[in-house]
Length: 453
Image 1 (cartoon, one colour):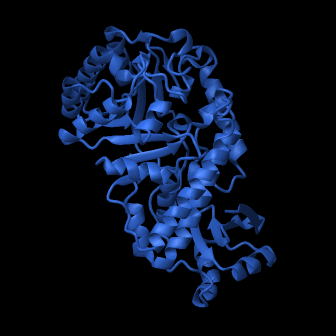
Image 2 (cartoon, one colour):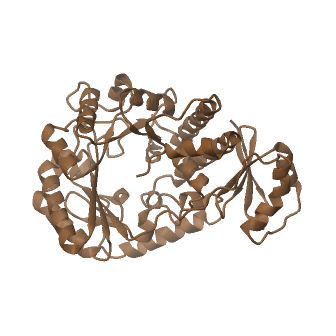
Image 3 (tube, one colour):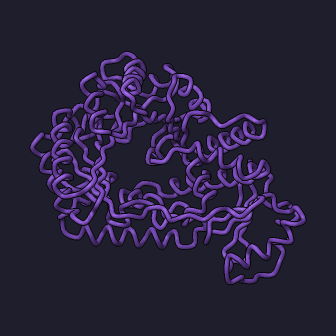
């Protein structure tokens, strides 16, 4: 698939994108996407620049072409609210800098965590962190608490105590508190499952597909299969009426995102999130160019999705999600992002195992970014400003909202991150315009199958 962007009418901010021979007219200001013919693409790219003053004028301009069948999208894309709004704070608590796995793609030193490895958060520190969250964010009506590791269930006593305390404070302060956790599934005992169910946790279990693939990536410290325990733990959650999200990481072009999804759906899981290996691993020999890997996987995913839909295959009963899916949903409902992550709105905070606060999880254990140290707030503001400047001319800014600001702060390759997201955006545009030939209801069915978090 050839994906290239040609800028047309620079002051008008419209793009013509060639995706697998299909031309897409994209409006960055409204997130509207139109499938157009090669003839119309030629007309648009050869016309003289001009500047319509409003979206309505754009629609009127395109109407004659639509009447002639040169635009394949049958109706205007529906409008909706912006993403990332509301009075809430997302607090990440790293209760364990330790793990009982040594995953090949772990960005925390293969699960060893460097100088902080082997440490779990003390129970009293966990309680202090909860107190600090509620006292610092008094104006927030919603407190979202995410337990993070390592493997967070290693710090079970601390986790239980902090959850109970958070619920007490939420009740006394008139706030809502929610809990989430991502686990490798190996420690999901009956007691743990009961607690997570009782306190209405959103739970994600990491399972990378079939047993051989999973065990080659997700290695137990003492050896042996980690797949059996993960699947058993996820099924135990289901038996208690929960719908765990199964998170699969694909780090080889030999595996397709849809093949992994289909396999996990065959195990009886209904909520599946399949993604490519993290772009922060770009320096590792095994994952030298994750952006290139992501592009290949996303293009293959889009091509297979289109083939299935045009062949009359109904969307899977399971709920699926990858970056392409979520961009597709944004484009269909014209949901712009005012910003990418909570860091740019001071709506995130992260605590390390010693209870030290940071602006975001990506800065954990990096003393330079510890809140309270001199100049940290100024550095965060400068970082946000730099990223906004970098993204100012990007036609996709209102889709990703500058995405992860923190990546630039830790010195990782933000270009790789951007290339990966841009690949997903163009693939989503391709799917949308191909699917529009089947009518709006076909796209609705596809979009409705995308999970919301």
